[in-house]
Length: 418
View 1 (cartoon, rainbow, N blue to C red):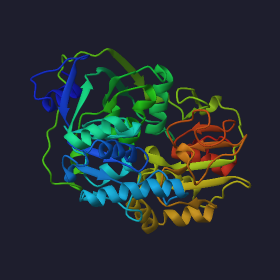
View 2: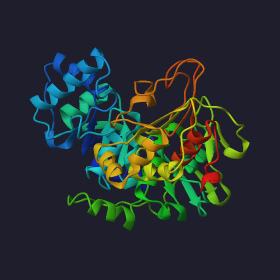
View 3: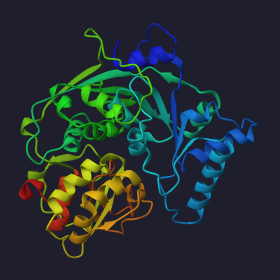
């Protein structure tokens, strides 16, 4: 069996499972935020089922529209807060010590190898970088799992993505995952487990790996996953002393597809509007003027990402008439960036720094685009109207490419600055 099949079999209390089977499995951890959880709460309340299966195995953080941008978002956050208080949910992260959910949970040590983790947000697949099966669900399934601690799954087929070679200067894991999605398309891994393997994976930091599994959903995958190694175990050792089970794929495990990518000659990649699969090497991207840059999100708002951007922005200025928005992914990242002097670099360059929030990624606030505006963004989606007006454009890039573009006022190659 593959790593994904082994984890699901263990949680379904079975010796083995095979792709296509429908199973019911125990869930170890549930993630909740203020957009999709209130509908689940309402479903339970309407049916007289207002309970949670285990208040210690639920993590709650408002993150999409915080601090609340309007009355509607304030009501959503209030509903979430009152529900968490009523059920004595221990792991509730209020604004001020909160974070974007998919950065917060790994950072706080909630996710461990071998777990089954679900959340009513499509990018819950992020946590697979730590060797867990994690996937996004809808509000109806969220209501079911909050009540029972169990959920049904169709066992996914697995795709093996074999990554070889060494990353060239100016190329990062964001470029790698954009290249993978460019090759297979936004439905190339539909309802599959994207298992990332190969020598390159072992050279990547845990933060870089989280960027890759985060975007598995952009290829249509059910989950993204990587087998834990010593670097992951060290990362976990700094954050949790809870027990866990490490699973790896068997040598004779079956894969529906194998994709091999040698990154040795890879350039920085830009996903042009309006699909994450519309990637091109930076050398083939014309000098497209931009109006805004966003550095942040659950994809690239971690401390390593801010360091990469700050390296390019240090001693330089954001181009005239360009807005550069920097959004640390969690309160802890924000504070660490402050202590390291990264925020000073951003401020001196002419950036604006936000509290942790999903904000502009989904066209929420803190950087919504007007008609005709273009944004170079480290987020994960560039669909029509994703960040604002239907006639705006979003270009997906790494933090390095975003920083370089902010300085140039156009899509730019970060290698010019390194």
